[in-house]
View 1: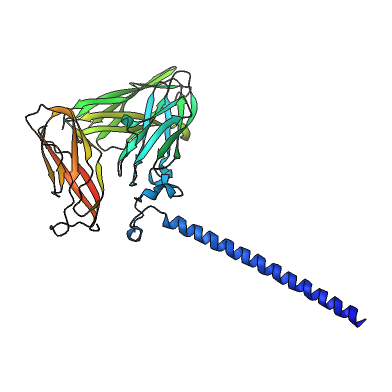
View 2 (view 1 turned 180 degrees about the vertical axis):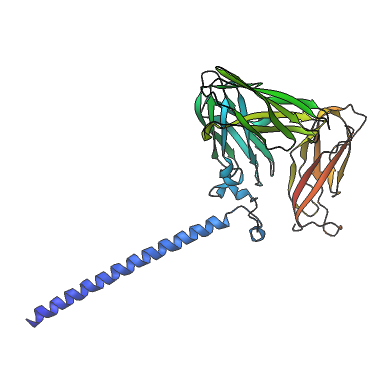
Length: 395
């Protein structure tokens, strides 16, 4: 009897020890999983592409060749909150467009390999075909809504941007519109061409309503640009038609340059159909545009010259470049500025930054920014742009 009892006790002891071992193994496995996850999280943080993370206090865009290792690095190119646009109610026969701005904040070159749209009602293309961006450079994806006959109602489009540098990725943009068959604009958009500086100019927009609401009216006109004013000047009511005339004025204070804006005509329709956008664009004065707006010379060591970078200057009339002025003498034009050459409407100006050697009296370590002014003979215009570089005294 005693031996049977001892055998049973030993058996229970073995079972208890087995259970203890099993619990210990499970606890160890869970601990390893947590350690592995912690290591992964640590790796994800350390691969954030910023060579000066410890000084990154404002969550600025990251610059590093490891940008492709970011979990969602496209957020730095265009924020998710900027990937939607609502055209509102678009009258039949009216075209409208919106520009989605893309920025390359990385050290690596960014290349857009393609752009496509899911709906035939909306075309999408890269502005001026500028598909390659250097550091800090920008471009725009233009979404152009085409309202054509027999195409009415709600129209949604998904625009896909394909990127193959610095890594393969896709960005999706979304547009929405309600195309109405009961409203026509004449003209479909307003264009102010070649307006002299300081001169006020007006144009007339006619809105033709053929809907069933005899009480339909334009109750307000809103402008996001303080230099563009608009007001309803007349409303004519006929049995099956309402014609509204709107005067749009470009004020004399409008700054020189190209502009593209929208007016919002507010009707007494239901909320979803109330706002009717009108595209207003034009050019004021004699202008010279600069691209890119910011030139990044790269990461330079003491005494090292930067790669050559080019700036495109485009005038509304032919002009000559008289002088390059910069608050940092290390920024220089690569070519000689010869005023004996004939005036041109487009100039390509090559630049270089010669980083001075340590001890020559100029800071050679850290981030440096400078402003460049270009003196021209076109109405004494001086277009400006920024130059940036990362400097180091380490050889």
